[in-house]
Length: 88
Image 1 (cartoon, rainbow, N blue to C red):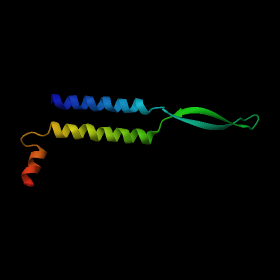
Image 2: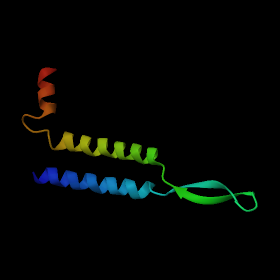
Image 3: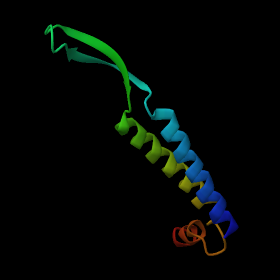
Image 4: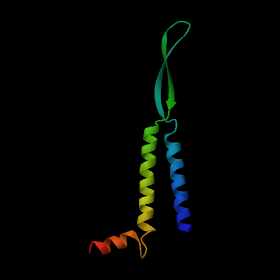
């Protein structure tokens, strides 16, 4: 149970890291029109690329739980041992 809790804490920390790494990091130029003069002008601003953030979170999830599965669940009746018995 302790190993499961450690893995969940590591995963939560990785998700927080991905969130803070991608939130409001992409710079874009917003085109605006002045309502009084009708002139178009641009403003620089930040936005969050949610697709890129989701892809990074998915990759981190697969890597973390893949490593966890290969290291913790490799016991006597683990999946890897059963698979090697079947394919011998």
